[in-house]
Every structure is written in C-alpha cells, then in structure tokens.
Length: 436
Image 1 (tube, one colour):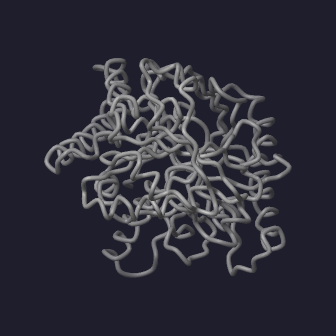
Image 2 (spheres, helix red, strand yellow; image 1 turned 180 degrees about the horizontal axis):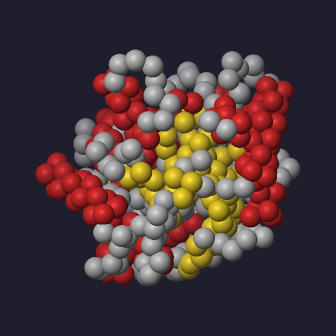
C-alpha cells in the first residue's frame, strides 16, 4: 500500500476501481435518478422506462422504491433481474475497462448553482448508523431497520454496485473540493452529458494524480484535527463525514458487510470488495447545495384528525395553504394542505415526526404516511386523494451549524431534510465491482 493509500485509508477512503459505460453507450439514457425519488409517482418511472427501452441503462441495475410495496414474489423477480443484468453488462462489453481513480464531478441543475463532488469508496468499518455510536462516518437521520432487508437482498449476490449515497464534509473555506477541481479540469473530462427528464447536466474528471490525492488527504486530515474544537465534543474518533443522502442504502451495505465478516472467520479482510461502498463526497458549504425540507402526506385520515394530533405544540403551529399557492395544480384543493410555522430554531421534523408516527401506529394499518420532495407534488397528491389525504409542508432548513447539531445530539428523525429538490438528486453513472 502506498503512502497516499495509507493516508486515505486512515480517513476512511479508498480509491475505487471505477466502471463506466463503454464508448457508444448513450450516457443520457444510461444515467437515471436515485431510486428513492418520486415514490408516489409511477408515471415518472414509466417515462424513464419508455426512454430507456432496449438500451443499456442503470434503471435495470436498481429497484425504484415506488415498487417496493409490491408482493414478495414480484420483488424477488425484480431483484433476480437486477442481478442478471449486472452479470450481463459485465460480460457483454457494456462497461469500458475499469479504471482506478476517484472522480471530480460538476452537476448543473435547473434550480441552483453548480454542485461539485468527489466519487470515492468509503470503508464500512468506519461507519455505523446505530444510535449511540460515534464513528468517523455518521448517520444524520434515524434509520429504520425494517427498511433494510429489500436493499440488503439487492446487495447480497450483486456483482457490482452503483450508488446514490452522498456524504458531506464541513469545509467552511470550501477549499478541498474546489482545489481538486481546479487541478483536474486542466485535463479532459472522462464523461459529460445532459441528464434525462430536464434534470440538468453532469461532467466528471479523473482524480488519479499524486498531487490531487495529496490535496484531498491533507484537507481531510486538517478537518479531522479541528473537529473536537469546532463541535465542542471530545470523541475517540473525529466526526468527519455526515450522510447527506442514501442513509438506508449505506446501512444496508454495512449490514451485508457484517454478514460477510460473520461468515469468514479470522482477521477483518482489508481488500474484500464488499467492505467498501461507493459514495459522492460533497461540501455542505458548497453554494450549490441548499437544504430543503422533506414534506409529509398522510393517507387514510381526515385532515381534522391530523390537525388535532399536531395542534397545541409549543414548538410549531399550522396554517392552511392559500388556494392561490396551488394554482399550478389543476383543480387543486387547498383545504387539506397545511404549512408548519416553527416557533424555534430547531428542525421542525424533530417534533413533528414522533407525533405523526404515533398517530399512524394507532391507526392500525388504515393510516399511512409518505415523504415528499417538493411542495407541488404535495399539492398534486392532496388534490388527487381528496379529504383522505393531508399534506404537511415543513419549513426551510438552515445548514449552518448542522455538523455541530449532529455531533452533540446524534441523528435527526428520518427524512428531516433533503439536499435540494427531487430532480437534483444524484444520478447513477459510475459502477464498481463487488466481487473479486
């Protein structure tokens, strides 16, 4: 192991063997959005399928969560089809030869400024989502163990992975990722494409020079050294990375890795492919990253009952959304959409989520809840489902002080925030082998 590899390993990073589509593959059709988006909009995924018929696409390598409620038999068929497609792509020349490199990427979206990130692999030995643990890589939202099995089933036996996981670093000077970008952009990109469904564009450059890798290691080492003073918490291991997106996917990868260790006696293998998970690192202070609330919609209960449950809190109040705000949605009904008004600086989901979860539990299967990116989608669903649906719009989130909050208080409730709007989410492009 080289000195730079050792430094990166101490920081929980590994330079991955990246698989990219071979020349001739249409990248705009290959790349599809994160599987946990548009969970109430089958029409979105139907359009993606229409655009990718009979051509290589990462749609055939993932399990969109809109279909997760299907029965066990259909889920098993879909999982088997995913594994078979992965094997086919590896064998039929869909991928170019693998390349040992990180990737610096720039993503443009219709909403905000350009976002920048680094694709690497992280060591799952340095990540844990279990409450009370304080590893190098930390969960930022609550993890629901019941949501892991279908994701684990896909990763078990999968010969490759593709990832929508985003890890955040807390680089106030915004120097690490931008510095690497300035260097690698002196060379030609290794991919450059628009993204389907009016989702912007993405360009990636290889990070394989000693200079760029040393810049990365030095910058992260500096952040790690300052963590104790910045967050006013003395930990045995510094808090360096926060999971920004894809927490359940990363938790599933961790669970499969623990299974692997249990089945293989002896020292923890350093080079086992499933010990690592591919992620994109982003800086929370990147001007192109804006934290958005993830809204709630309650199905199966009258709005009056939902308001009764949420009423009287000292931390927030509710107000009905004016009909004029829903004008973009045909025949929209505003009577069942409400806006949360915070009375404190805390993230509203901290108080709302436990109240709604208790309400749903008492509903005994009649009442359900989904998490929605974008208020227009809340308006659409509330209008479509009528008075048996109640939309709850959460307020904006301030990302300053986010790391310190997690360092001191642990993970937030699940689905407390989103890094941008739905179509700004990560698109699957890069793959990595999970078998040697």
